[in-house]
Length: 98
Length: 309
Image 1: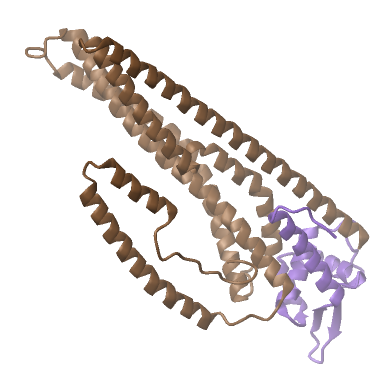
Image 2: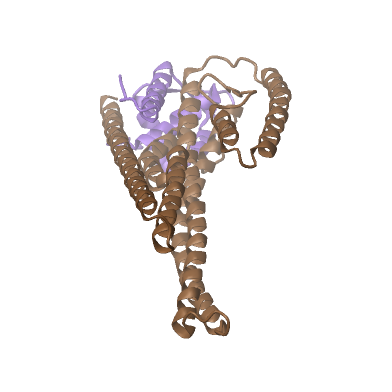
């Protein structure tokens, strides 16, 4: 992942896919599984992972088996909750607040 | 389905519409005894069925739906999916009903046109000679003309409704699938849009779904449609009676009175329909404008969210 440029203006849907994948996993997730769930290629995945890591939305754990595992941080959980809450407010015919 | 869980609601006795129909049967007098008895038997059997099935279903639901762990995100996703699914279903149902009504109207119009053509052609070719006049050419002419125009009209109705119905059905299926995945807390299938993306996409479709209800016209509002149908029947009856009195040597003043009542009913029906249409348009335009504003605010809020990050 080193050397990958984070996107200047990230696509919200890709960010949301990564956060939703991790939220759904309820725990650490191997990188490749998250990439498959986000349905993006490796380059895009690496750039977005860098972006969400730099914003403190996820953290990486180095496991003994050599596979890096990604976990949603409380900040990441809160970010995903806010995104879902805004859409939910709109579908319930309210202005998105907060 | 709500964000609080599954809600099962049912009524074990007649609805207000049921009572109104029963009252109409009593008041109509002609042939009402048999229909009234049959109606009451059906109500009793329906009530028995709903009582037994509803109770056992409620027990089953309680057994298979233990109180889930509190998760606000999950509740929000399920709530959003359930609302959009209901809207997509309503749009689909409104258009499906409008499509069926259009087919029925086409069939009635085709039959009326065929009869008018048959009589017109017969009179044009044979005069009023019903005994020795030849029917072959009028029958063939009326049938072929009605078939050609009927088929052309059916094709245009189909082209108007079928793509739209397919679109609404596709959204309904996508939302129902996602709802199933959320309720089962299963991982989504690879390559499919995630729930958040699906909800944003669905919220962008809502103006189109509202429009589907507007385009469905009276088919989407059975109460007003019923009132207008009744008024049309009364209007037709008064006008026919009035004409019959005037043309076939009846009482002229009675004929005029019938025609006057018929004309009043035409005006009343038109007024009810136009008022309903105006109110419906205004309501849906307000709804649409509110949705557009909400969507704009959502996108602005999400853009700001990314910038703040």
